[in-house]
Image 1: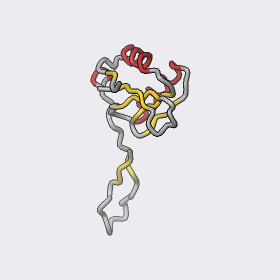
Image 2: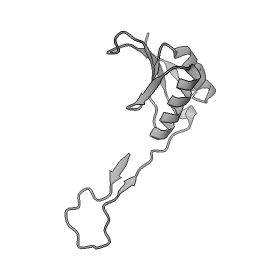
Image 3: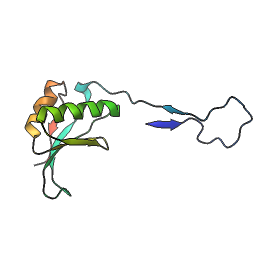
Image 4: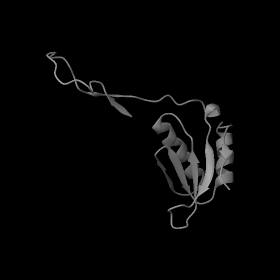
Length: 112
């Protein structure tokens, strides 16, 4: 996530002023403090099922790394979009086990 440092600035006489964007990294809480939900979704996917992991807070790079490890452990494709991990197929039980092994103890199975 990037934040402009001088968002409201219109004019300045300071010659050393820079308009560079500073990088903001959200601190990722410990896995035991994350409250993740694992659910099965097939809406707007042509009837195909995907396992959806939601509720992750923290750095997007950590979310990408978690998504990559879950996809490779399940041996399927997927993606990480908008703070959610999508894994192709119904792998709710396997994903729950993998997350518990990684220390995500507050993970719950949601939906039907």
